[in-house]
Length: 484
Length: 131
Image 1: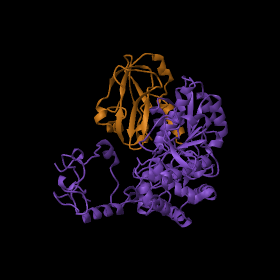
Image 2: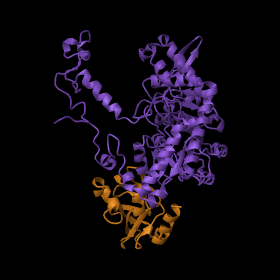
Image 3: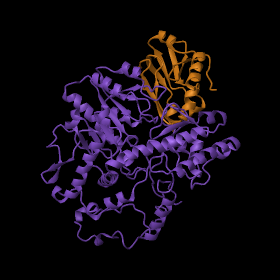
């Protein structure tokens, strides 16, 4: 497929679009006009439409295929969320518009703050962080601000289990902390003795994902919370897997002091491909003063922004505005559609679907990484047997699944399980789709035994073959530099 | 079964150590480690002259699957690094015990060698990890 830049011809343009000369820019002051042409592709409107439509047909997306990408919660994005978030009154609102002209938008954000507080059991919420990783950064920065405000300067370490998302240690290091890794026990829970051996006056906090990335709920969470608090540390909840417990168990009740939520996962806003996210943070009483601004407050009959003036101890701003407006609105609509009754059904059906899929795959001969544990909303298979006896590994299975019309589950993560597939069906899939996934896996297993090269050479039906990811990583080439 | 030369010593964290007999050792990652990581795409080495502690993080290897810290198996001063790896990280995959070496240490505590595993014990550890 050609790049749109390669289709470019000097002077060609869609009549409905950009002005072709400075004279056409009536009304824009001279000092704002650029002196050199922007390097944009010059194509007709029809060429542009065809180019992007063709590209979209190469997409493997939640709108076209089953997408059981573990820990990413790729569930259906309700169209009603799109429709309502794109009401012209929302779309046309300028981010610099005064609060008096933005009361409807502010009311939505205020309600969303309240809903997220209620469903997580936290005392305050800021919607500002624009992604999970930024929420993590904000969360750890608040932990740091808390210790510093108390003059507790010796706390230099953050504890992170070895099963954690890589963003956890990265966020803590960005905030100036040293990382101490804690091992995961063979049952998938945090090893309490390992935790005890590293806790001390140097402990600033612990970052936990619960349910963890190995797809089990840590049964020792109350003990962990007590131990960390007794040592003077705080508990950080990574909300990546919040879908599993939504409306059933609240991180605030488990003893967590700070949580980030991935609204683009749990609250079903579109994501993937690097699109905009939302990683709001919620906090317990002790971290309330440090929440990032701006937030929304109720003020008599109306609403207003809370800024540094209202929150002098805030860790500050992370973004020019209060998060990605369109994403927050979609999440708000989704939350309202679920309501108090719908939230626990998300957790129930995502756990039911995951456990159904796990049991059926085990019955078909696949090996679960934690066979003695009930799955939460996701679970891990290990294909180490296939890799050893058939020389067909997890990546081969994943690529062959594409030929069967299934997006590959997460592969080779978490790192502590060899040859693993992390599978998260989500609550929005029906039984026929789950059965279809099992049938595809059984079929690939048979192919691996009878014709292994077929699986090793997959995918065969996609618009691109298996990519050379080694060469892509070694010879990074990210920017189109022109035809010469 | 991966290759575990009997003349080398090993750390639990999958580094190998070759005694040069002059108070220096050469360090790399084992064949098993490179196999588990897959194709390496990036290697970050310690600086010559830096002082390392046994068990401390000292280098990073990155593959298409993961980035992993390398821990120094012994304490000492870095006297040489395999700078060729920056351009050709795949050498570690191709020749983990030879041209794929990472760095050379001038030891500060020769006694630490007793803490390391021999080939048999390291082989047993890999075996145990797989089950």
